[in-house]
Length: 92
Image (cartoon, rainbow, N blue to C red; front, top):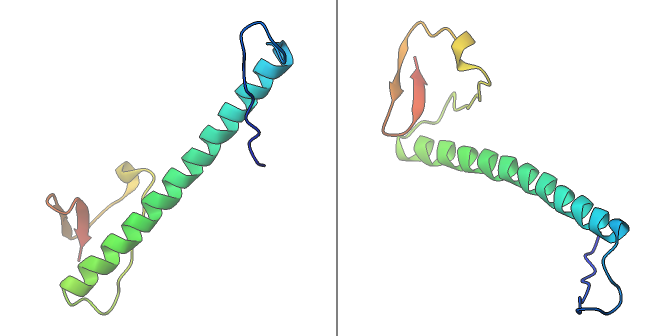
């Protein structure tokens, strides 16, 4: 939905009302919801780009994947290490 800017003037119309203020609050909330969705989209794209860059630079051609664990405490790794420099878990 397009944004229609209101020009506010002291003591003049349109004036402040509960309806106008509630409309502003709804707009602010909606904007923040969209921002949160965009943050997730950008984060996912950054991860995919980093994964592809790393695979190309390290000559990985097979078994390239990325898993985002919501709760790392429940993950059991039998072999691998945490690559602190690249902030990733390397699983063998």
